[in-house]
Length: 286
Image (tube, rainbow, N blue to C red):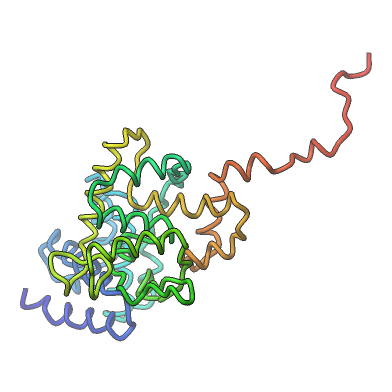
């Protein structure tokens, strides 16, 4: 551990000066530590062949593709930035994740799901997640002051990539949050944890989500992120420009948002086939 400590400190400093979101240093340091422990050596003494062997090991354990790629990101950062070996990162390959269509709830299923959340705080939080398309960490980190009823927007602080953004404040959501505030009286965080000084832990919201799925009798594999998928898909189906949805979701690339066009069934159904523009006899001439 004495050997690792200076490297750990340097890596954390490298991430700090790049203003990465608070969760990133924890996950990156954890990943490099796991890599080091696997071989019983300082990561400074490990090379590309060791990285490859570690990736093979991780795949054999059944690690998820996102989990594997997060470790790849950490190792690429460690070698490329902390160790200054600029030619190494591009030689550490990402895993190609199978592109699955996101699970999306219908409007009726959203109502059924949200009405099955038993806790007032969790119901208000999960309703906010759907109404504004927020990630779990984003809804958990909301402050009372972030709800700007005058301008009709919600300020989302430190989203993915440590970026702030504004999202719409639904009129119905504002009414729900006002009713919630009158009963709960939060002062700093809109959805506080056990004390007012700290936000609710996202794991609490995930647990509330699982309970609501069971209570509602939904057979779809629903997670909190499903509400975000449903938000984007429902906007697309109602005719909202995909570039606006991109901004609301905080996506850097339009390609990340474009996946929702594959599940927007109303849009797909309403799209005219080029065949419909042709005058075609079904029966061939005899």
